[in-house]
Amino acid sequence: MHVPSPVKRWKPLDSSGALLLVIGAVTAGVGVTAYLASPVRRSSSVSTRNREALIAYLRDHLSGSDMAIRVVRRLCSSGQDGVGRPLFHRLSMELEEERSVVRSLLTRLGASGRSLKRVASNTLGAAVSVTAGGKPGDLSLLRTLEALSIGVQGKRCLWRALENLSEVPTFEGMNFVELEAKAVRQWEAIEERRRALVVQTFSVPTLRAE
Image 1 (cartoon, one colour):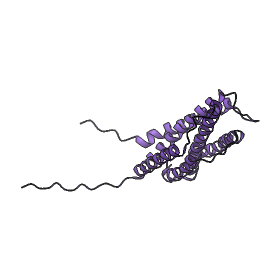
Image 2: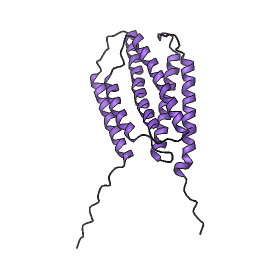
Image 3: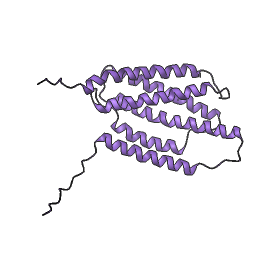
């Protein structure tokens, strides 16, 4: 007689798995919404299309900055030690200063920082910040640092791209070379902290040989 196999019960997702589902859903929604909302401008001039592309590019980075600032603020308020806390406080201030640079660039291009992507990014940032961080030795903290590291590298690409555009409206105190150098220093500081936590997060007792 055939005995039916027991029904497998679904295991509940941990916070990291649930967060990945939220990120996937929101990202997909943003992509579809932005695509449908973008008008076709085949008849516009090359200069107009280029300007619109630059505005969209800056807005994308503004959205990324919003999310990074939320995450870093979360890290500042979570259970960090005497090494991590000063690092994240400094990053929070620097990220806010850099976000103001992007806002000023958009203003000088005659555009605002508002966009559908940024609205969705704020929603996603709120969800990410809930599970971001953790205490030294927690896997969630290591994952958060890796995500920040990737984001800082993307910001470095932004400054390097703008450095090559002579048409970008400049203002006093703005130096893309220095901003890129600051991004490198931020990445090195995050990476140093991440590597210091690897052993604390993954070390296991050495197995005895039989």
